[in-house]
Image (cartoon, rainbow, N blue to C red; front, side):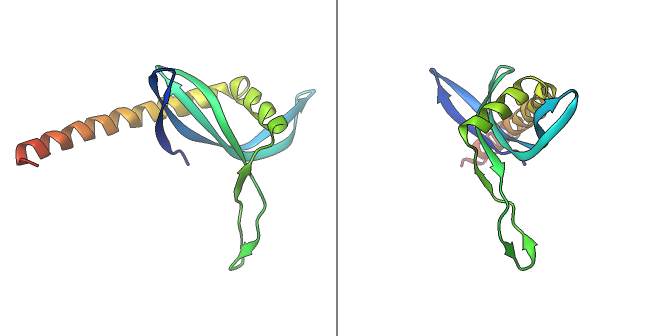
Length: 125
């Protein structure tokens, strides 16, 4: 799931979305991935450059109506640093691909918004 938001950063507007990662290894030892973890990272981006923001990880919740719940919980700083480093290095290609998809959605949304504004202006709204 990728959500979208905008916020101010150093005088310019930066956009962000949530990148969902699954089975991200906390450790890679002799080529063997270990400590696989699921969660979400907020990715801030502007003009093709990106950075990792807040990270949450998947927790194990109670069963509701027989279905296990997997809530997102705040990630401790030490684990967050490991995940952020992994996203910025070994998984950077995945973030780049997700960012390309997000930028395409941004463009499509902007085109639709402009078309909708023109329709409203012609209708006098």
